[in-house]
Length: 233
Image 1 (cartoon, rainbow, N blue to C red):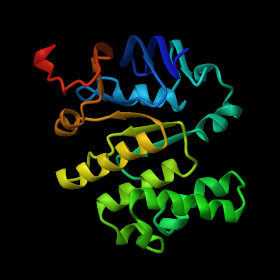
Image 2 (image 1 turned 135 degrees about the vertical axis):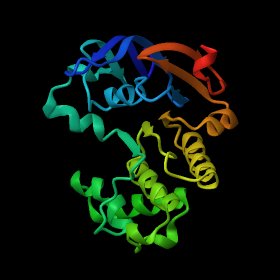
Image 3 (image 1 turned 60 degrees about the vertical axis):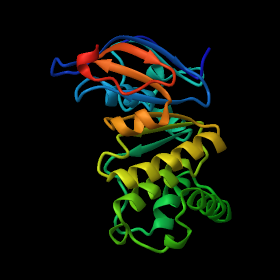
């Protein structure tokens, strides 16, 4: 079995909106995969299924051999400890410093302070923010805040990193820097990265695997693919 497998997945929300329709795909360990498509195509739903923010109506979702759709709610936290998530809107805690924001998930696990410090310092070094440890989120640029989010996502060295539109609020220069950080992490940590995005320039520049969703249906899956426009379906 591959590291991630979706088998005949259907997701319909309670308001009747069909988000995914019979989606099946496999992703290997260490892959970097872009998930693209217009707004409402099912990109965010697909990523939420992987860390059990949502559950499918039908089908199975396997991460590391575990059918996460069947996980008991009381065990979801164990799954999420092994997954890093990077959001478009950062979700940083405004009253905590950079160090404290990155350390927060480790503290919630009950990790010892020395181990937390070692991991935080390693994570900030990977994202190039060693000189910002005592800064607060409102003292950082958008690109720097996103680097903090990435550091928080990788502080536990997860085997899966999920990014939901991480460059959506950034200018092209900052976007390129963030993608270079993620590309390096993908190679250094051998983490699988799945990124939902609308950013055509990034997808075309990086030449990674590209999964294209349209109205909840997987219509294209290409290695070293380009961004696909709706009219090219």
